[in-house]
Amino acid sequence: MSTLFLTATGTEIGKTFVAAGLIHALKRKGREVAAVKPLVTGFEDWSLPASDPVRLLDALGLPHTEDEIAKIAPWRFRAPLAPALAASREGRHLDYDALLEFCRTAGASSRGVLLIEGIGGVMVPIDERRTVLDWIADLHAPALLVAGSYLGTISHTLTALATLRQRHVTVAAIVLSETEGSSVPLEDNAAAIAHFSHGVPVLSLPLLLPGMEHATFAALAELV
Image 1 (cartoon, rainbow, N blue to C red):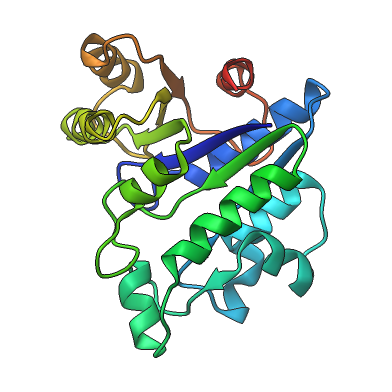
Image 2 (cartoon, rainbow, N blue to C red):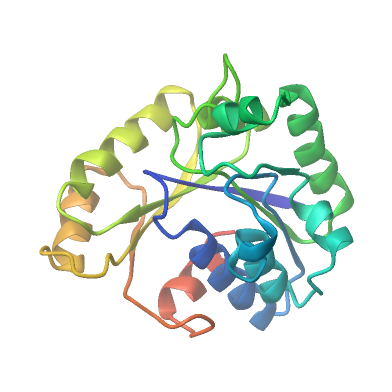
């Protein structure tokens, strides 16, 4: 079983889009793949069709039933905030040990590749003491770092990369997902980041419609 943790430099960067594209690419190669998005905030019934869990279920070819959503996203909160804050708004407590156990069980019970999609950026608080970085490090899983191509992404991406490395997290690749309306060409940002990535592959992903194939997804599938 191979596990890959998808994280990012911030929120609304494109983790779910990359996860869905990678799922399709792995399936085209005839490989089995599963995916989980254990923590979701900003989750309301009216937003269900556009939610991250539903987009992952679509890519996996699974129905959008309550049972299927609960299987891949057991911790769902209404407020569009960091998990620690969203949980407190509902008077709930997020059990960090249970979160780790959920991910480990998903890995043990799945065949092929397991994609774990995180929430927000690397340093988003999960509870009063732990962040997404702790989550990744405690799972001992390699990470795929997704970043945007906006002005300022070079610093944000290299900071996130350095932070992951400080906790001895293996970074399988960096995906630079094109930001609509960015004033900086996608490939210029990718080249600048690659200059400082010290061997971590930097892959560019232009703006695409959902479900479209791209060589970057195929390249990622070769890395998993």
